[in-house]
Structures are given as C-alpha cells and as structure tokens.
Image (cartoon, rainbow, N blue to C red; front, side):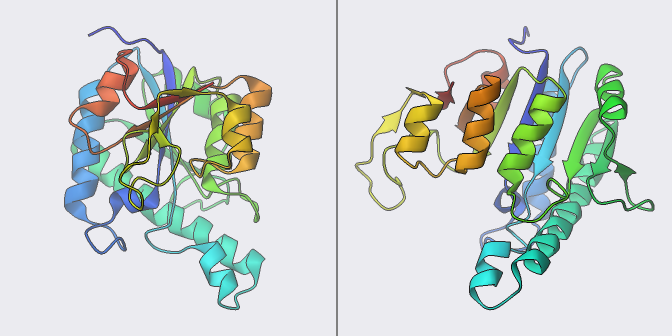
Amino acid sequence: MKYKYKRILLKLSGESLAGKGKYGIDSFKVNSIAKQIKKIKRFPLEMGIVIGGGNIWRGMSATAKGFDRVTADYMGMLATVINALALQNALELQGIDTRLQTNIEMQKLAEPYILRRAVRHLEKGRLVIFAAGTGNPYFTTDTAAVLKAIEIKADIILKATNVDGVYNEDPRINPSAKKIKKITYLEAIKKRLKVMDITAFSLCMENKMPIIVFNLNGKNNIEKVISGEKVGTIVQ
C-alpha cells in the first residue's frame, strides 16, 4: 500500500471513544480505533494523535453552569489525558510502540511535550499521542491539534468525526443538507462551519496546513484517506 503522506496528525474527538450514551469510555470503540490505526501504522508512515475530552468533561458547558472558565478548561485538559491513556493502552495491546506527551507535566504518567523529542519519536516510527490541549485555558483541542501539526511539520491534519465530511448545515438536523467536497479556510470561517473553531482555521490558513474531515466509523476510512482516496471534505 502506498501512502500519499509521510507524516500525519490525526485529531480524535473525545466522543469517538464514548459508547451509545456519548459519555465515558467504551472499550469496544477504543479497541476499534486502535485496530484501524494498526492497519496503517507501519514505518515509514509517521503519526501523531491529538485527542479531545468531551466524553468526560466539556469546559464551555461547565462555564455556562457557573464554573470558572479557567478551572473548567483545566479540568477538560485532564479529561484528554484520561482518554489518551485509554487509547495508548489499546494501541499497545495491538503491538504499536507509543509515547504519550502532555502540555501539563505529569511525570508519572507521560513525558512533557518537547518538540525535538516528539519529532525524534516520530522518526523512529513511534506513534505520539499529544494530550492536555495547549496547556492553556481558552483554547480548544482543535487549536491544539493545528499547533502540533504545524510544529511537527505534518503534511496534513485528519479530522475524524461522526459524519462523512463538511455540510452546509448539520445533516443530523437537516437530512437534505448538502455535502461540500472541497472548501477554502476563508469560506469555512465566513460560513461559520462548526468543523473547527475560528482560531484553528486561522492558524491553518496562515500556515497552509490542509485538513481532511472524514467519518471515523467508515470501514478502513483512515487508510483510504492517507492513500489519497477521495473521502470526506478537504479544507485548504
């Protein structure tokens, strides 16, 4: 199998690890993602992952209910670490060599995020999971994913979702919503498409970092995307 990209950054939502209730961690879902990744994780493909924490804690929702924003955001960062540990465990059970790095130091759980060390792991064929967002409140894990992709010089960001691309409206609410196969960053910002936040889109636009939005639940979709098949929506 020939891959179109050499180094990728996969962005997973916390909800991708959840079960039917959309909360918590479902071992079947986590293992399913690990098996998908096992199919593609062969040297020389280099892969980093940024994971969200919405299946455990949502900072913005908590703020609306009276939580201090900074406190709520730090709690969300800790939720991403829990998800990262679950994913790391599932990946290692599949025989994948991984490293977990966090933007908040947790010496007994993970390495601190150091760019040169992360790149060296990637060059050695290890999969690197980046957790704890940016390490700062007021920034989403989408923004963290874009920052990491730019820093490690990834070829592309793969944004895994529960829908098969970007639509002009939410297809779960409007069944007649139209899928967009290709869109520019500026169009995505102007239309306020809720694929990524404006900060993340702006960073991608400034650094010419392409994004492919695709359905994680489709059969072998990760492999199809990195092989160059037209899956999902490309934002560039």
